[in-house]
Image (cartoon, rainbow, N blue to C red):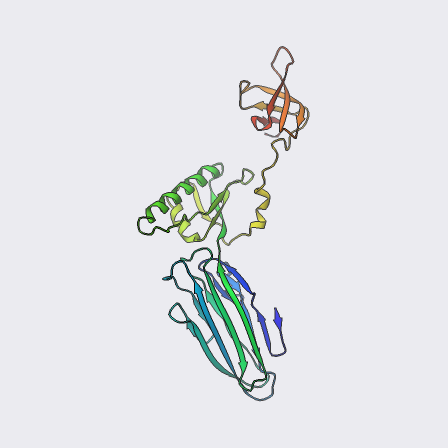
Length: 297
């Protein structure tokens, strides 16, 4: 935040936003799922009435020039693809403040990397005060949490991925640049009843998922990649295994046999086990992912 005796500004140099978001100053009535905070307040620090001028010049970098951004001030000055400048004057009584009410609505159908570049200039008519700020709003994907039937997380995630790919192929007939609405999908085995979706257009993914049995919609709000980073690195297959643990072999020639662990090789992710029902105690070495830990079942 930048703070002067006559102006307070909370505008980052680069604002990363999703599609269909409103960037504005927050208040208690706002729908926080669709709001990104933005604030700029001008104060007349002189005792007499003074006039101020606000100019905003913009340019856009878009993959699809037909989509529309909107930028507006409190007095309903609207900027869209048809115009690139706002020029606005207002008067302030002595020692009074005004929130400019700057808002930016990101487009519903934007593409990753689309951006709005803006330069904001505020000057007092008497030339005493001036402020210039350049910033850009860059569109990027969001990560949503999908709710689903417990035990069917991976199956439903795969179904959604297949639906999204078929949808892309159908849209490519009309638009050769059509992209898959599901950019990434992850279903960690530790999470029951939920999985994660990365997308530019959550509303379209929700439509795609309506015909998928067991899909129960999105959890309200977006999440940050830092919240799920721990699921991106797979745990070693020997995690949780202990000497003497009772296991069941689920792959290979001894599939279905129960055994006890007699040695663990973490580096090779292998375990040596002794079959419980074997007449001769012959040690058997198997991959850790080829067993199921019965002690924790």
